[in-house]
Length: 141
Image 1: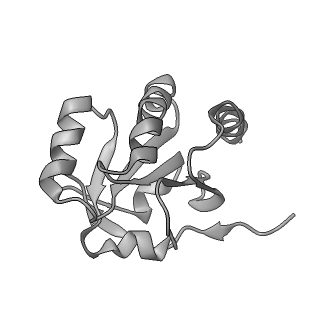
Image 2: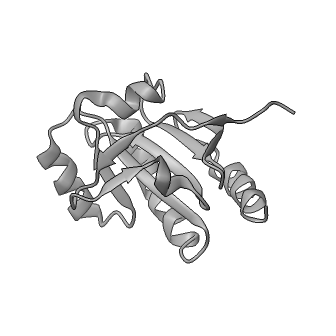
């Protein structure tokens, strides 16, 4: 079984100014979604990401949205407000986290286990049915 790689180090302020970093990955299964509002694929998968965040509410699971600096911060804030994103969203100034996770196309998402290790990277929209099964099995660990 391949050894899991620790998630790349990152530290970003969320839209409320709170710092989110690798510390926040401990003890939770985390789905990090790299996106931006003018990205058609990001926008089409977002309702499913929102639903997933709601479906796993109260469990050891979290969604972190990392908005890529392709759109200005204002449009990210507006999108978050308009669609009521129920998870933490950060603006990736300079694309630092995006580069750390080696994202190239969007949306890209990364599933991370409770130890803060990368389980899987999804380029484009994941198969959410399979993703839920994977999250369920990680939550049992």
